[in-house]
Image 1: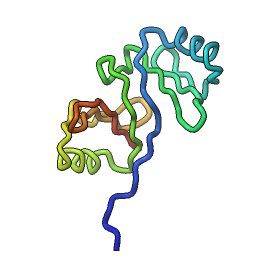
Image 2 (image 1 turned 90 degrees about the vertical axis):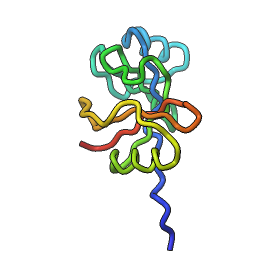
Image 3 (image 1 turned 135 degrees about the vertical axis):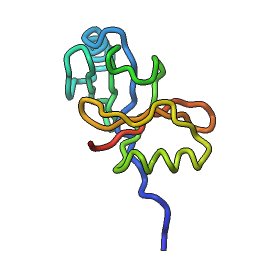
Image 4 (image 1 turned 90 degrees about the horizontal axis):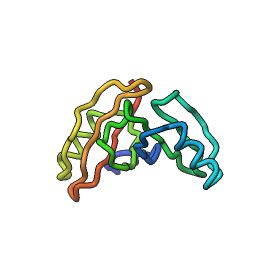
Length: 119
């Protein structure tokens, strides 16, 4: 029997930006990425093929300006427990975001990642 955890999904790649509207225009004009969802100056999700490019304005910048892969998981607390057991560290404890529960962590090599899931 396989006791490995169910694979997480990279839900998006987070890019903090100072101006969401300008960033949406830039990525649409430069790379042809259409907007899937825009939440004012807070956040925009762009369709980048099989991946979502998440543009986080200053209010939604949970990573202090660091680009990060965002892993969608069914249970944020359980994922963080596994992350710490594997040598990672939690930077920001789980918190309610406007659309999900999210936490910020680092893998054992110092890369910033976001772990998020349903409320």
